[in-house]
Length: 199
Image (cartoon, rainbow, N blue to C red; front, side):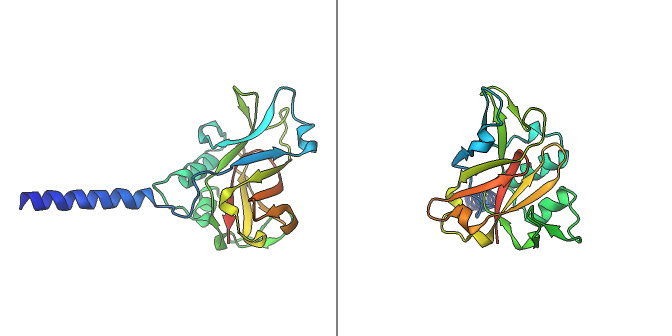
């Protein structure tokens, strides 16, 4: 009887660990495979610095809400909806929510496709979330395995300003998306954490 009880306990523990490990089964563990900076963005980068997408580092953010939202989505042991992220970020979901181009959207109709990654300016040793001390829009082409074969109209980029916690939603146009390679060309309104959502 003791052996049977021990066996059952081990099975329950294993099942519990397996369930938590796959809490966010649809989220890709690799957020960004490659970043190519546009010529106009490259021209404004300080000498000796590059713009990269890196693993998100919430401890670097000034906004505690941004840090909490990124930490929760990137935690393999938790399942987090876009609505829950917006609650953490203190976004009024009863009000009209628009993309950067002015389209009214329902963020609750989307779910995260990849973990948050950080867009940063770096010299290889330190990272910054601005360019020469200014919040600056940057145009990039990002490559993501997770969006291959998706439809542009079903994708949306969600970005958080790591200083203020302000949330930006960026539409992806059909002409700026290659579903075969997973390349998306987009202008981000700031640096900092971003994820891709799918309807």
